[in-house]
Image 1 (cartoon, rainbow, N blue to C red):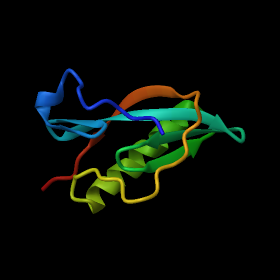
Image 2 (cartoon, helix red, strand yellow):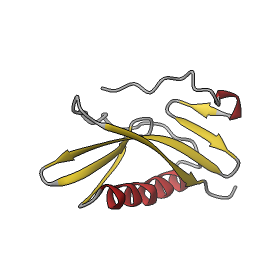
Image 3 (cartoon, helix red, strand yellow):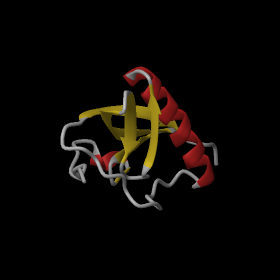
Length: 102
């Protein structure tokens, strides 16, 4: 399992395990890898994953899945599932997801 460090330079903005809150958006660290001809995009602090035929499609699908997840969880990211087994070679990026209105 890949662990995203808690000591990010922007921690004071309101971060959690693997995500940063900035206004009405949360920034998430995303792990991406190729599996069975598809790209998997995975956010480890919520255990939310999606896939697509391209990296961009996988990220867009994950952004939508995270937005729905945040609506259901009232904006508080928390992994409630068994984390995915992540391969040793992954790409890492960040995406911004708009949080639901309170």
